[in-house]
Image (cartoon, rainbow, N blue to C red; front, side):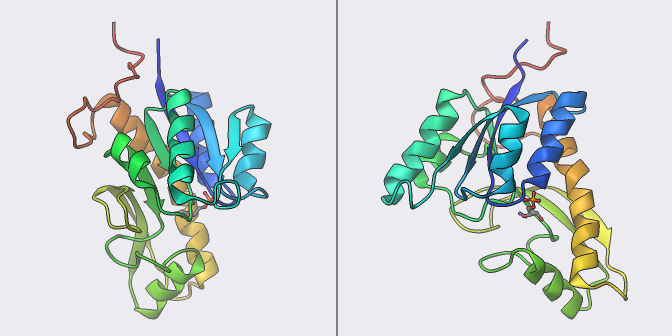
Length: 216
Ligand code: GRF
């Protein structure tokens, strides 16, 4: 039976991507990782894809200087591998209009704060956690949201709360939040598979290529 096909976009370490791949392997997530695209030739994400035997591509402004061609290359790869849902796992670039339009409401990003707080351009990595601590927040967390043409502005579909301790450094808080991300992303994707979370848009919630293992 066909499972939900996931295509990844990732720029750096890819630990969230790895956690999702692991959840697919153990069956916690009824989905299949089918393709990995990174803009960064030296990324951990590409190394992990190779290790896992998942097809991968490096597409960037170096391989495709024209942004429209880069957008099309990403879209073509996702279509060629029959991707149902695109997962941004630490992807540092904006998504082009053709990919956004074809995968409308089917591109998800994970962000290490409780959006709309501490998101947007320039809010990535330890900057997020520095800002959270500097603001005296008592809690932070993880947001999973639908991707639009800007950074971190699309509708939030799931959030998990993580405490901020008074002694936290940005590194300690980042590590606590990353640990939460690793289970929360796969759990949220599984809720999409089962229909517990309904993505907006004209298509059925479980993307058109996918059928849950429990369907007759
Ligand atoms: C995560 O903190 C995620 O929230 C953010 O980028 C980081 C990616 O980490 N979007 P990794 O590459 O998955 O380890």
